Image 1: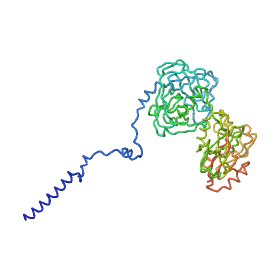
Image 2: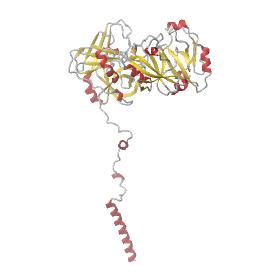
Image 3: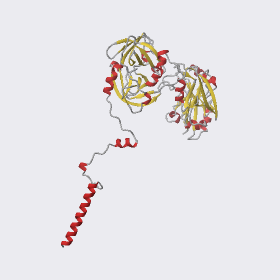
Image 4: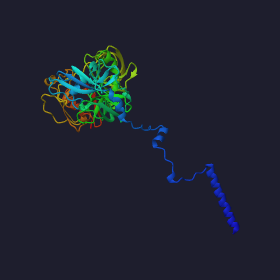
Amino acid sequence: MSKRFTAVSVALTAVVAFLVGLILAGEFTPVPVVSSAPRAAPPHAAVARTGGIPAAPMVVSFADVAERMNAAVVNIDATSRGAGPTDPRYQRRGNGPADGPLPRDLDAPRQGAGSGFIIDRAGYVLTNFHMIEAAQRITVTLADGRTFKGEVVGTDPAIDVALLRLPGARDLPEAPLGNSDDLRVGEWVCAIGNPLGYVHSVTVGVVSFIGRKLFDPSLDDYIQTDAAINFGNSGGPLINARGEVVGINSAISSRASNIGFAVPINQAVAILPQLKTRGRVSRGYMGVYLTDVTPSLQRSLNLGVARGALVQDVTPGSPAERAGLRIYDVILNVEGREVDGNEPLIRDISAREPGSVARLEVMRDGRRHSFNVKLAERPVHDEETGLDPLGNPTRERAPEPPPSVPLGLSVRELDRRFTGRLDIPESVQGVMVARVDPTGSAYAASIHRGFIIMEINRKPVRSIADYQRIVSAAAPGDVLAIYYYDPTLAQRFVTTVTVE
């Protein structure tokens, strides 16, 4: 009995000694008690080490940003003797300038209040063009209460920017300018301005969208934000979390109080040299209306290329017409640089000097061609439409036939007496859209009443019979390329509609 007890004791002692040795040597670690467990590393720390989504930055205090920026934000009062502004932002529906609608009495003295910000210690101020348009007197009030008479140095109505100078001012606080190309949707921004006369009000929100088109699709690149921009905010700065100006507050939606728009600061900075030296901006111009090459267009028009800018219309007498460009041409590159879509091409041409020559490579009916286009100066867009604010003809209408299947459109023959009142060119031949079924596929493709359908899949449409014959031959699922004329813009476009 004593021998067995002794053997067991020796064995237990050996096991205990072995385990103690492992612990001391670091080969075995007992399970820790829960209450003494070390704190787990935050998930973003592990992600940062593995190259995944970067760690979220610390929350920035816009109180500090506003404190630094307030001194560079100014209040602008613009007074004229009458004849209200002609800027198209006062005449379009859906969105309006941030400083109010067009006065009812155009002959009455007009007084507008808005904002601006100092960009140079010598007294240069950026604001909106529509703020100071036709103003005979401009008064600029600084945050410290000093007032100056503002002088217009230069304006660019196309992107709604104006540059002012404050004579006699020096050593002014200037707002640091950021890089609007670095903005991302969801990024925090704040707006400072004088809404409804409440000077130096600060609102905070996020960037909701980048590159919004409002008035001129060829140039607009608006930043959309839900930071409140109200009447009187026009011309004020949109500021990022680093305290840099990334936009000029310009417009608000008339249908929602929390949708505002700002001109990207990079757009304004790019034209500052011309504003200072010429007082205006000259942009290169070809005289074509473009759209991106989409899979639907490539399929329906048998384009043979999956990228580039498709020519929808060529303005009579324009540089493009003189160079030989035609509708359905696909511009592939400029000076050897590839063109991925119509917007990069427009920016490229607009940045060139009028009178310079742009060498284009074009795909036409499956073959490549080269064209040298001598650019003209971009003209001021004509806002006369001949249609009511909803884009519908303002004169009498013929009886409307029922919608035609399968696109959900009703069309009618062109009446030249009617189209003459709308100043539609004689070269525009086709059928006019009389009604659009909201449940049809054409409605989803943004075909509107008053449009004139000229071609479908490059086949001329000269009558209702032509239209019915082409559309009836299409099978469900087919994609139709519709070439049409929009009287509201006096332009031709190409869009695609899928047959249902």
